[in-house]
Length: 114
Length: 112
Image (cartoon, rainbow over all chains, first blue to last red; front, side, top):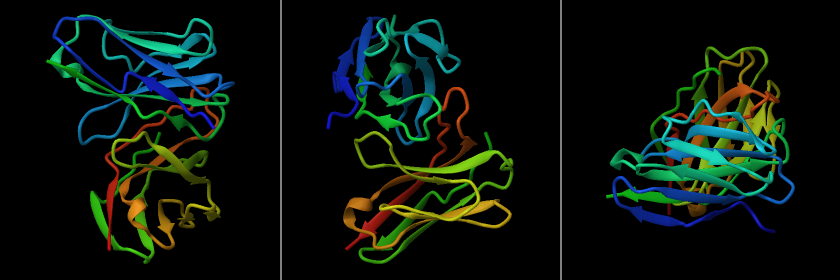
């Protein structure tokens, strides 16, 4: 069956540019999460959506990062004025509801800022 | 969520049992132990979780000590495809957000 899909799989952008990363969760999953993973480290939580609303955005590093989920399904992570330090793998996960024990992760988008 | 301590890396011979330890000495009574793994270039994958009783599923077994301060994930017959980073996570189950706090994990190398 279809899992969590993330596009693009790789993105190279120049410093200062704006990027959008897309996540298609598993159909029917109401909870959606974004994580960021730097090389050699475990994933770090960024933001969590329950339905259309961002229930917890405490992991977003600064105001250059923003995420939306307007219809409660697809989510877009937006990064303004990218910096080289933003280079990482951005992972999306979904679960049937926030209280579910298992999160299903996508393959991630590898973002490289040059 | 309680902090966990795992060895940085481990090796295991193919076909043998892989035993991955995790220390969580500050675990609270309402916190569960979760295990995820991440194969190279893939997202993390849920393996198993437990509160205080030992648990087993098709992927692995989880052994939690009686005082709950440590646990061991057991892959009974490791294969080359089990080579991955294994994360032990302690968290309150069914919290409002269900987000996961990953540490550095254990890099398991299964060798032929």
